Image (cartoon, rainbow, N blue to C red; front, side, top):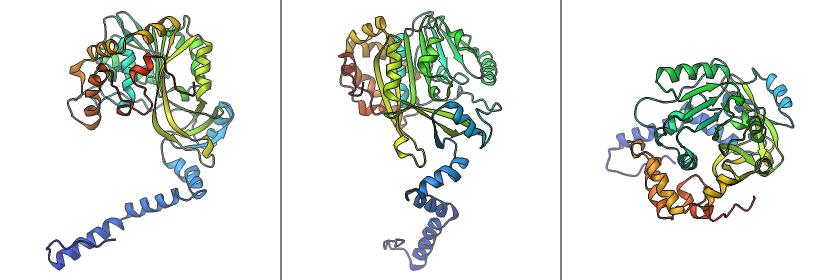
Length: 364
């Protein structure tokens, strides 16, 4: 395993290299990784490891199956503080070089680019201290008089409001009440819905009138029965909803929304001892009212793509030519030529031609 090919080095140098390689593999970190990988490869032993030691030491680890959120909260309380740590508030990266566009954000940017209009109001549920606002404005030209309202926890609202004032972002406002978003043109939530007490449809019912466009992203869904688990967070334990995929879509149809687009990314949520309840993909959806959906579906694919390319600020593309940006830059041209390949994006984002023609995934 540690043999080194003869490269013309002296025997002493070759021995030194071999000892160095052995030392690397036998280092404390290497031994720990080796033990961990071996444990995770053994059924049942892996589950026990994930449920006990792994859960307490790794942020994002999950354990337990619970029929209601209340049951999940009781289980979480036996392990530590429940809910998010009020001492933590994460600020977005707003200085330095533009950040790379994440592939999973591209579908949201695509539809948001078409929907943004002068004077429109966006309700960003669970938007932290303006994470989506500061990220998306690197790639989109915001029209005048846009209101970007973030609904968050009280301590995040306090921090976000101070941040908005400090960086002179008057269009960015914060609230703790979802009802303050009434009259919004766009409802947006990314990576937050599964932590909330109420599901998407219930949250939307609190807004009158209903927003004509709903964009949600990074939601853990699967094909089984909806349940709750608990997740290890930073200094606390939080209830975590795993919803049935079709149930979510049906609940939106009951509110007279139509599904215009959907996409997914490979991402796991492993529930120890419950492999049938584990999640393999996180999903995103674009729902729209009947009037808006008909307009979006019937628009010409090539024209649509060119409009999006024009609305995405070219100055906002990352200066660093990393792997992600290198894949996404030519994607605009591919869309404009009506040859978009969903493999360029997060798995499951269907080519524009299929979406416009009304083709839907076979599970809908």
